[in-house]
Length: 87
Image (cartoon, rainbow, N blue to C red; front, side, top):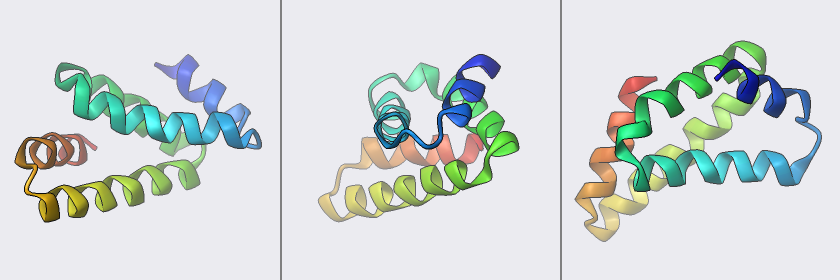
């Protein structure tokens, strides 16, 4: 997990990698619920190394929760809340 976090933080300037990381985190939360604790652990490690990235993950997760509530997709809301709780 530390290797993933370090690789992402070391290449922070690469916008494609950064955007891919943000998308992948939220996609894993929604599609692989059993991996939520591991994804949260990587995000926590990223927070130690580069807190700006963690802030962006939290912002995007919050937006997705609001969007899922508006659409009535309660499964996605539950999974995102589990992720946020794990953080």
